[in-house]
Image (tube, rainbow, N blue to C red):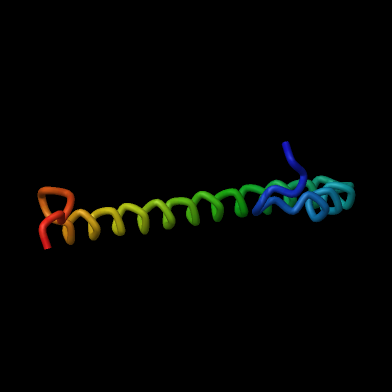
Length: 71
């Protein structure tokens, strides 16, 4: 796994892990990771919705034949 993947701040998580020396800090770290993963999933869903809407619009514009060969 690449340390510098988009949306994954390796250095930040490494620092937070180093600071998680007690139960409270560890629970905060877990909450941050869960919250940020949820945000990534929401962003992915929004992108998928936009792609689907664009595909529907293109299909509607092109019509049932799928192409406009006769202008």
